[in-house]
Image (tube, rainbow, N blue to C red; front, top):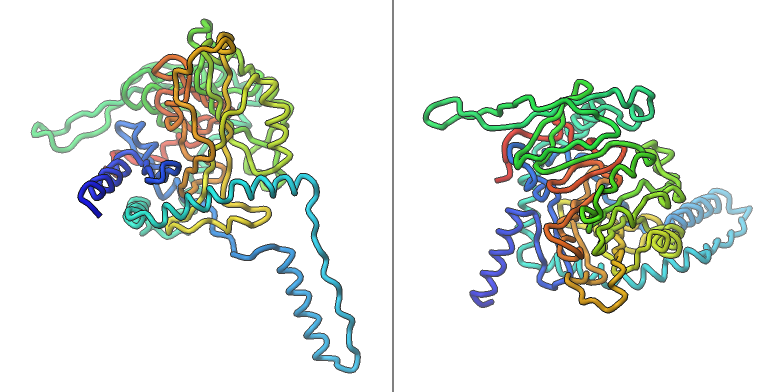
Amino acid sequence: MGGGDEGKRTDGLEEFLSTGIYRIPNGNTLFLDPVRILNTFYTFFSISPSLYYNARPLPRPHFESSHNQEEEEQEQEEEEGQNNNKKKPQRKRKRKVYTLNEKEQIAEKRHKEVRPFLSSAYEAFVEDPNSLSILQCLKESHGCHVRIDDALEIADKCRESNASFVELGKLWQAPLYEMSLYSCARKELSENGGETVLKQERKSTLQLFNSLVENKNNEDAMAECLCSCYVLPRQSSFLMSDLKQIRQLIPARSSDGYNLILLDPPWENKSVHRRAVYPTLPNRYLFSIPMRQLAHPEGALVALWVTNREKLRMFVEKDLFPAWGVSYAASLYWLKVTEDGHMLSKLDLPHHKPYECILLGYIHKEESAMGDKVSHKMPLDKQVIISVPGDHSRKPPIGNLLLDYAPGPKPVRGVELFARELVAGWIAWGNEPLLFQHSKYFMDGRSQE
């Protein structure tokens, strides 16, 4: 390889170490380190990698289908029975052939269409000269010296110490809860500028629920409520409420509308409901989101996380997007891998595929129908984002990757709906936007530098 190519590789690796984003040369694939990306939003704190990744799912066994496994076990039992009783040969049972229903057939067709892109993206990452260095960086920074049992125990204690905002928000006392907001600054302990401590200054007392809380500073802030501390990144805001209060997000002036809207709804899911991981929301409730009133007059990019259930995809494409006034533009895919670089499962497992989808669409301004020129980049279809997953349903921070695709003025005004953590420069709404902002998920200092 020429010196120019080596320089590009080095630059790409340096960019990854500073931003958490590695752009694979095929032009359609990114590898993300969510912890590094999130840490760019903080001045005095850094997220604990061992706690971010503590509940990552283990790779699934590489068998093709649970039906095949059951058939093999059944055949083995029949063979053993025949060997034990040769005088009474048993009739071999016919194999049950599982046939896909109509929706499953559509889902399988959709999967076959995207499979080549996912496979190609994964191969491009594995074959990239920097991939081993990137994976090694992940292992070193993610505290692999911590045993997984210890990490899980620490994480469980963190969850136990977290207030259940979902439950508290349902109480009649919810409007009475308050939080104290502190600004943060570094204070030198010695004259020679050696040791420093974090200094906190009382700033204000604010309503916790049903009110917009803002950290307008260019530095981190800390919030104290319900006997716990929470870390707020710079220039971040949140509104913690149920769906009935979402209209508070509608700006007083339409010119202050949002031109990038990111959503990760708690879709109805039997598995999630059984495990009580988080409360789910009936699909019909999403129609009440005032999407057009939230959008900027010059338009908005809408990014919606969806599962691989065909029923859900059809609901979004045929009902939800049209009701919101959103026109489909492209699909992004999140491919999940382990810290060793292996896919969490084979691509073709029927019910547990190692990827999820983000549907992109636009709410257009009224004049756009008259042939106005597009002043922003259009997203490429079937881009692939590769990363190691964190806690259950916690998505990688992709908001800032979408900034170039947002129409309207710059800097982009972004809002995340159903958020469970805060992002610098964004407004977050949901019934638990402080979930992963608990101070126990953070470390003092920038350990990843």
